[in-house]
Image 1 (spheres, rainbow, N blue to C red):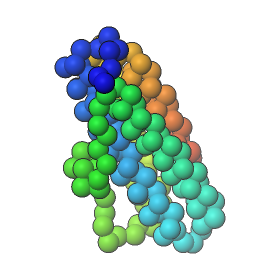
Image 2 (image 1 turned 90 degrees about the vertical axis):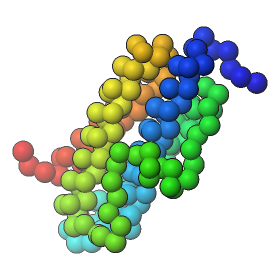
Image 3 (image 1 turned 30 degrees about the vertical axis):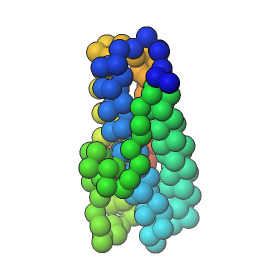
Image 4 (image 1 turned 45 degrees about the horizontal axis):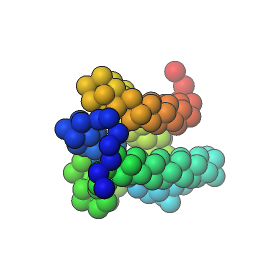
Length: 158
């Protein structure tokens, strides 16, 4: 049964696309956090190991929430690694293990890339597609990524 939520089919389709982009970014970030968590060494090993675990756990929950939001709005969530790779704006580096500092910089950059995209998606879903619910949902997700980026940035001096 198709949802009757007061949003046009055309707008719902656009929102599904936005949410699938968010889902792709979340999955690429999740995979990267796991890779970095597994391959840490040296200074701050345990501290960063736990921080990355905290973040991939939070990102895993947000991935599920995004997929469920897509379903709630009558869409179909993408779910393959090839779809995630093609829909995400984040880049992976197969075969390379960065230093701890490089990992931190890359993760800060990824969170901030996601935040910038979410900021635009918040406006689009509210103003362009008339979906205040998704706009609110994405605002909360944006705030979570802002906080995760902030925690990682604190490992660098100004």
